[in-house]
Image 1 (tube, rainbow, N blue to C red):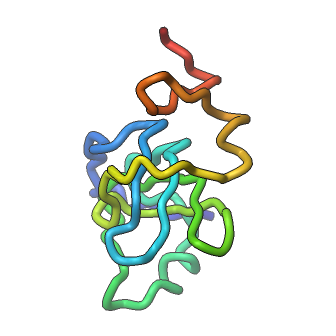
Image 2: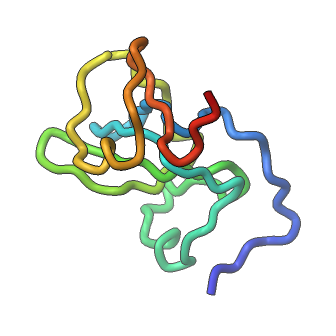
Length: 116
């Protein structure tokens, strides 16, 4: 069961679905495919993060199709730990092609919510 403190007030997300982001501390980056307005994972998951780097729960959390130099995976990351990735380096996560189409300008458009 996921416990959310009722005093948490969701904030508007700073980033958007399809945006390429990188972690500000750890060496990985990825494409946003979903956003939670506040923490929405298990308490065990949150407690497993070392206290000195544990993020606040009252902020948006992003689901990323993530990758580092060794592997591809899905990451769940707080807004405070993400920054835009401006490298223009190609992404290799195999699920990107399932969920997104690449636009001519290099950005990603969701295949599920194609508003254009």
